Structures are given as C-alpha cells and as structure tokens.
Amino acid sequence: MALGKETIQLKRKSFENEALPHMDALFRTALRMTKNDKDAEDLVQEAIVKAYRFWDKFEPGSNCRAWLFKIMTNIFINEYRSKSRSPVAVNVDEIDDNFLIGQLASDVNMEDPEKQLFAKVFDDDVKKAIENLPDDFRVVIILSFLEGFSYQEIAEIADLQLGTVKSRLHRGRKLLQKELYDYAIKNGYIKDLK
Amino acid sequence: MDCQEALELLYDYIDKEVSDIDEKQIKEHLSKCKDCFKMFKLENNINDFIETKLKNDNPLASLGDLKNRIMTKMDEIDSQSC
Image (cartoon, rainbow over all chains, first blue to last red; front, side, top):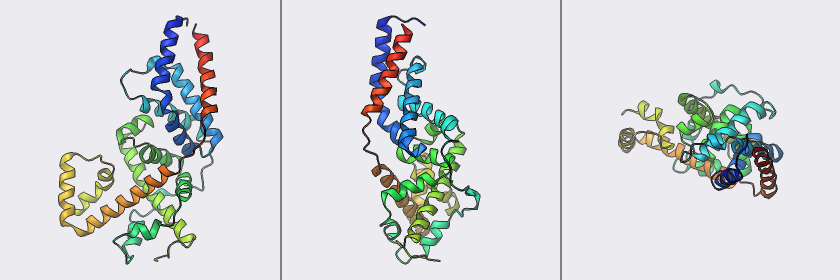
C-alpha cells in the first residue's frame, strides 16, 4: 500500500508518542509471563511491531495501554504458552479456600499475622511463587497486581468472560498464598501451625 | 448484609470493583462483625504485601537495545509503505 511520506511520518510520530512510552510496562509483564529475558524481549518486540502495523486500527482517544497489552497477551497465549514449561499440574479445585486463613486463625498474633508470615519472604520468593502459577492464572494475576487493570479491562485484554477473570483471580490468589506459605515453612521462616 | 454475602464480595471489595451501595453495606457489616473485619484486614494486608513485593522486583534491564531493534523494524515497515 503506498502512503505519502508525510502520512507515514505522522503515523510514526503518533505511535512513538502514544505507544512506545508503554514499552517498560510491557516488558516487566512480558518477563513475568515468559519467565526469561530473551523471550520477554522477543515478545515485546513482536507485540510492538504488530501494534505498529495495525496502528490505523487503533481508535484515537481510547485506552492505548490496554490495546497494547491485548496484542501482547494474545501473542503470548497463542505462541509462547506452550514454550514456557508449566510446573507440575496443580489441581486448583482441591485447594481449600480458607487454607491460609484457617492456618492464621490459630496463630496467637492475629493483630499482625502477615508480619510473622511474610516478614522474611524476599521479593525473589514472591517472583518464584508467581512464576510457579499455571499460565492461565499467572496472566490474570500479573495484569491485576502488577499493572492494575480492572476486571473489565483484563476480560478484554485476555479475551475472557468477566466471571472467568474473577474466578481465576480468586483461585490464583489462593494458589499464591499457599505457595508462599509452604515456602515460608520449608525455609523455616515460620513454624508449621498444623 | 450477612457474613456470607460480605465474604463473597471480599476480593471485589479489595480490588475496588464493588458498587457504591455494596461498599457502604460491606463497611456497615465490618463495623459490626469482628470476624469478618479480621478476615478482610488479613486478606487486604496479604494483597498489599504481594503487590508491593511484585512491584519492587522490577528488572533494571536496559531496554535501549530492544528499543533500537524495534525502531529498525518500524523503519522497514515505513519503507514498505511508501
């Protein structure tokens, strides 16, 4: 398709002003999705280049950040998901909703339980716990916790029903809590209350 | 609002996804129910903890090279469009 030089320059300028500033955010999310630098860089590059190709489809004034995350999440789900090895399958349904809460309820120090539980958990431990989540849960958790997208935005970005977003966030949180709790016990940060 | 109704909205409340009416009713319930208050506070603290840790753990990778590669790809697209 032949475009005038001026049109191309305008397109380029508006993309550089509106889309490229989101590159850092796209990268930090890509890193949590793919779990390694190399794949994260490739994913971000593929997403931004694709966004540029389709820039005329972007509605000016709408949410550019969400639009870019939708493109990237879509590529991740379709192309990268199978590449990133998932850990041993977790039967999510078997996790007791009140697992952590039940454990903490028997703790003497209810005033500030998270201080005992998590005081010694490092940033890196949380990163590992997130990375251990099955892909479906990890994606919605990252979009919510790291990027602060609303349920509705996540539904649009990940192409899910609103109810699915809510249930995955709910189960993902429980899985994360269990993971962190087990980790803290395993490393002797806290005593097993059982 | 009873305990069960409040707990069903726990994460929606933490994520600020409840309606104004629900928010008001949850707050009313929490002011009267010590158990639910504890539960909401605990979950909220865990939520803040994970969010903070996750945001702290940000790679300080220099994205300069990546940006250059992307710009080069965009140049190619521009020249194809002429």
